[in-house]
Image (cartoon, rainbow, N blue to C red):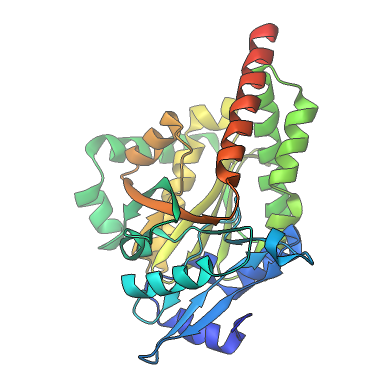
Length: 349
């Protein structure tokens, strides 16, 4: 059945221990409203009477054979199958077999790390794209983190961040108001500008591309639609935002979704580390079992930042069913674009 009735979706969601904020129906609504997708969620009922929900969206179009559908699109987090008690491997096979028989040009599914074990033996003919996320174990709460899980170096860095923030008069605001959304987005735009300078690229081009990938409307929609789930933390110095973090709290998982800081100000104050500490505290207060810090895109410095906080790499994958080799074509385009940017950087440096 597609789309999934919201009442049924809510019932299945409530009984899956690995469900995250990305699995909420309101999240799918944000994707459709901001990204121009359509609700293509699917409900399956097995012979054993179990109900499975696959949150998914589809690009609107009249020709089904040219349609693209995803769970979920890039920049919108993970999807995958929801089921009471968690999905089983044979149920994954059943859903993949159904998707393979579909007429879509491409279907992609990127399950959460909580369900990665059930997807590890995907059916033949499914393209597997390896991915890695970093996850901090919150079992035992803040006491266990301070006394057992965090190294002495990590504890020292976090305490230093607290002392520097207090001495400098750094103030942290938490909520999901439009003002906090605007403060976060301003830091994102400043990060784009810095990235353009560092790579010797045209700032207007970098900004345009960044705003297209991450429009302001996206964060406004998420904050407004998920008031109890979306928390924005903004660190201010003398009233000016210097660092911001967005986390998504649901069930056993808190997701560190986005975070940016002003390098010149936030760096010396270790404001980003302090916001991570406050985010972890929020997760523990909410009773979360995991703090998922997302993918790092192969950026070594970002991976080290997460690992210093105690997060560990978790292997998972994205699964793609393609009627044409779209992934291979996209990889080639990415290599060409990377080569062009590298050449422009060399000329300007």
